Image 1 (cartoon, rainbow, N blue to C red):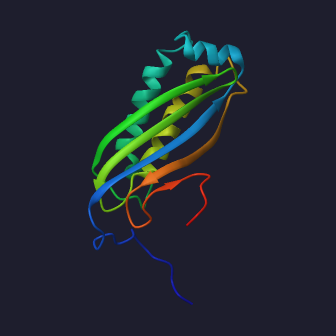
Image 2 (image 1 turned 180 degrees about the horizontal axis):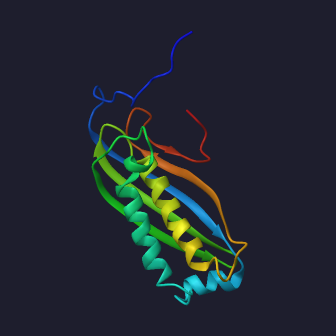
Image 3 (image 1 turned 45 degrees about the horizontal axis):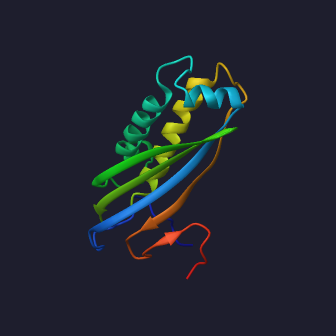
Length: 153
């Protein structure tokens, strides 16, 4: 029986190139809690600025949280928020120039922002939850461009 790999994947043979990943996730909460986030009226500090900072810290520290994740050269990270009556959608886009892509960084960025928003509203909406954290798009590397929902080639 073949043994599983015991360390990080060897990426030394891969080409350094621009790579990009976009992830999203949702904070589901009652309308009053969502409005508190949107209006900057949460019990704690400015929720969107704090969540954006948490996302960027999560992006930069991904290899510290995910054991086999390579440190990569992140060149840009963006975080956006969209609102509906019962949710806040967080989108994190990460760009890098390296031998492996920034998918984990984008996912960690979304998760960091969502956890921060949850912390900001848990006192006014204890039933809030995080949902559908996923990669929605990536570019670069061997597999090229991929977008959720498009047929695999």
